[in-house]
Length: 167
Image (cartoon, rainbow, N blue to C red; front, side, top):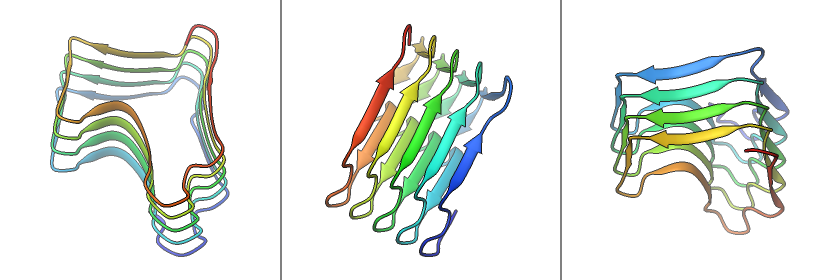
């Protein structure tokens, strides 16, 4: 978490090689999070790049996400925060939930730009053969798989979503 004004800018998070993040036979409840990055201060978290490497896997198996819990979350709360954000799912990236329950505003992936004039120039790209799947699962009560939210005034200008072949 970055709390100060102008903090956490020019950040690159990049997974290398084949990596796997998994939750198996778990319960996340009470706004729990598996992976979270948060920028609270004004003008923070700008020019951030997150890239998931080729063949990276994020999965949930026999898991319950309850009461506002999230598997992967990034949040920009400050004014003018989260501008020039890039999220790239490289080739063969996999995100899936198998035999899971997501309930009561729980999310698999959520990106939230809450601050005024935040989330400008957002670029999200899915590489070739990327997979998003929900298998034998329940997603109920205002829950979601991939949630993008711009809550502040004048937030979310210049949004770009790229879906490549076979995504």
